[in-house]
Amino acid sequence: MLCDNCKERDAIINLTQVEHDSKVTLHLCEQCAQLKGVETGGAVLKTPLGGFLTALGKGGGGALVPTPADGVRCPSCGSTLRDFRDSGRLGCDQCYATFDAHLRDLLRRLHGSSQHVGERYEAPGDLDGAGGGSAADPRSHLLELKAQLRRAVEGENFELAAELRDRIRVLE
Amino acid sequence: MDLTLLPDGGMRWLDASGPKSTIVLSTRIRLARNVRGIPFSQRAKDADRKAVLDRVQEAAAASDHLSSAVAFHLDEMERPERQLLHERHLISKELAGLERESPPRPGAALLVQDQVGVMVNEEDHLRLHGMWSGFDLEDAYAAVESVDGELGKLIPFAFHPEFGYLTSCPTNAGTGLRASVLIHLPGLVLTKEINKVLQGLSQVGLTFRGLYGEGSEVVGNFFQLSNQTTLGKTEDELIDHLGKIVRQVVEYEEQARDVLLRTAPEEVEDKTWRAYGLLKHARRLTFEETMNLLSGVRLGVGLKLLPGPGVYTLNKLLIYTQLAHLAAMDGRSTGDRELPTVRAAFVRRLLEDEPNVEPR
Image (cartoon, rainbow over all chains, first blue to last red):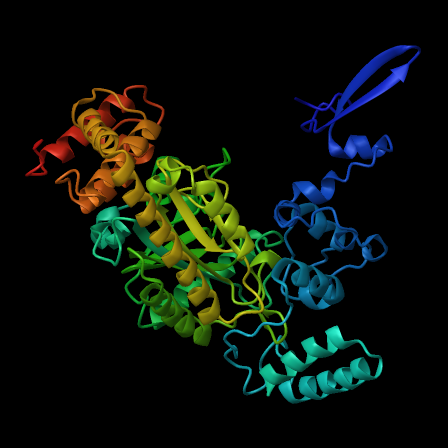
């Protein structure tokens, strides 16, 4: 069924209102429903990731909708977090660096961890410095992690500390 | 397109030579990879997509494993041909462009050599995959991994020290590995134990789908079981875990079949012979009915209630009775209303070629 308002997109929301003592039901698409001030919550659920999270029983969580950062654009491809939220797909490899805090959180929800422990990969050309920078110097990365670990232990954030320790182990 | 260029039509796994192949039809491994510095499919322009394809083709030509790969350029192929490749599990529905009216965008391609293929410009730039007969995670992974290793030396893949291989959808990040087995579970369905097993799967980090993977329905009691997470565990851990659970599921299935034989031997025997009889004599068959009847016959063969047909023939029927295959075989369109008749005739012909299936 097409949206009663724009007559273009599929209606996914039935909005029932009482006007002058009679009941009026509007069939709206998500965008038009939002324009009419209806909190749909559907944006999260309809994406592939939304479905995945729902399947995991963690759907609709607030962390997937980090509105304040929505305006941040990936300098490489121009995607925003909103784009990601709408499509469930990232724009390019640099998006992982641009949105790393949000993605780390999401990856932990999805996989139970954000630390890759599988096969290490070195791209051709990285050894002679011609690489495009996906792999920062592992030594500097390691030192940074160790500093983070110290701070986490001092702050008694033991969950983070355990994760950092695992990541350091992998690198070492 | 000339599918005869592919030995066994790209489906050596049909030969049922692998372990446990009456219950586990096939084992599939896929690895998701992206080329560093090129936008992912969602954002890629046609020029980006062509650049990806060029890189993959150059790398394939320079490699040992894919140097004589057959290339299919999907944007230049007609819809029924693309559907045919999808029916062979060589390309996804998405890459085949079956959900849209318009043909796939430039750069959509499949490279195949032996049992390993590379889908190019799918959701990720490269989706390497291999399908093996029976329950054989180790061999399938070893083969796909060696192609991955070789291509990774020739193409810079997007990789992050913390997040691993970077993918268009974060559900695939890390290893980019999806390992799956196509398994036939009529015993668990008939004994109504299947829901318990499927619920258990999600608790141990696995998921199930229908015959064609994501979004497909379960027909003929064929289930695809696979890992749900791809990050935080090594490739070996993911594969070992799936292997362990699949072995358990196979055991449950065998137990369920024993229960059926003990408690209702005549009913089971009747069911399998009826299924065989219908397949052998029906004049019109829908695909779904064919799948369900094949399930009954496969169960009978597995329990040795039916002396045949061979599992190879049953596997072939599974693939060749699909829409695009029948249409191509008989020079018809995939919308032809006579396809159920063509299907029934084809099934009869294949079963007649099978010796030694006579009622005792």
